[in-house]
Amino acid sequence: MAHHPRSIVPSRRTPLSGSQRTLATAQLVSAIGDGAYYTSSALYFTRIVGLSPTRLGLGLAVAWAIGSVAGVPLGHLADRRGPRGTAAVLAFVTAAVVASFLVVDDFLPFLVAACLYATAQSGLGAARQALVGGLVPEGERTAALARLQATLNAGLAVGAALGGVALTVGTRAAFLAAFTLTALGFLATGLVLLRLPAVIPVLPATVAAGGAAGGAGADGTTARKGRDGGFAVLADRRYAVVTLVNTVLLLRMPLLSLVIPLWIADRAPQLGWLGSALFVLNTVGVTLLQVRTARAVTGLPSAARAVRQAGAVLLASCAVFALSAAPVPVWAMAALLVGGAVLQVLGEMKQSAGSWQIAFDLAPADRLGQYQGFFGTGVAVARTAGPLLLTTLLLDGGGPGWLVLGVLFLAAGCAMGPAVRYAERDRSSWLTPAPATAPLAPTG
Image 1 (cartoon, rainbow, N blue to C red):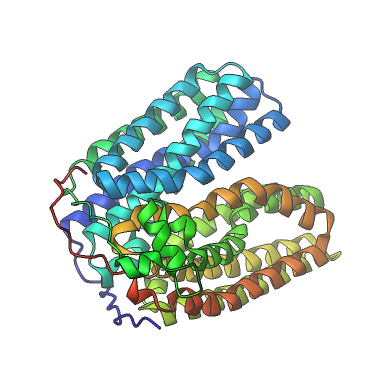
Image 2: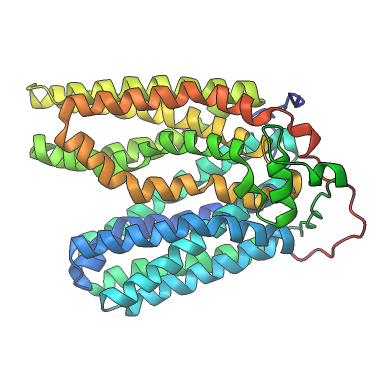
């Protein structure tokens, strides 16, 4: 089994490095734009463009399905060409795609633009993670990602407020102003990212002739072969198992944005405002507490433990949500929904902190981009399959459906420890890059 040195998470009072401050600035600017887009896009495409909700949902499902496979090749591009330049270019592409939404007037151009948007976003996420890996010391990455996540949520809150203005006004001009803000946010993000130091790409590790000639087996030989072929992560079955377990836990993502508002509308329409309030509660909670929560994660064992705890907390959250299916007074239902949302944000923060550490510690240093891109496919899968799966399970299944989901979260949380130990086995023999025979020029 590979042994990893204990990471040291810096104190909350440790000053951020210049690179981390720049990364946080880029995260904040793009998040403000994202918040405005996510708040206003659905009503813009249905009320202003005239798409039916069914076509809108179909287009987004297709787009994120395509985006789910884009992270690996674009992450590989970041590994080979440099993550700084790749991330900046993808931010500029995202800005251009969002600008194109301003002139979309039918389903087909919407579908094309949505696919480009999801592809660029998936690649940008992988390149950003590779940037963190290249610019932040190994022992500080989880803490840095916690700060970036807190910054992300703060930006989303500001952007959502601005998008809410567009929703309140309701005119085409107001919606276009929100989309323009999003495009400008990603344009500024690309410019900020270019201020970061260049990260020199790491040459691919070479494999001894004897090892490369061996057959596939549980000792990681298949992963060695895949590594020589380019997209090593596609041959890394152990990392795929870890990614799958994490994807199950990411099914929590559509709950507050989709399922809970529909749940409230069906059972207590007079509490319609509570859906937005719970989203704000989640955003504020992550902004204030994510860094503190991440301090407990200092290596693979503590990361697996955090994910296991997250599964238990998410089970408790689902159990509380299940109680709201009972015939209770409106005030009691509101209290149950708030209680479930509080537990959910606690589980979310633990799962996020643990998964960041796991995703980095199990990835080879010369393949951070493609490994982070592969790990990030869980987000796209949750966005694609989650809405249909969860609306069917919860809105039709009621309280028992919530309990089934909670047990699924608990099972995934408990499975992460064994999956990590399985993925960690013997990795020190093939995850360490061989010395480069010639330097590569910094390009990103």
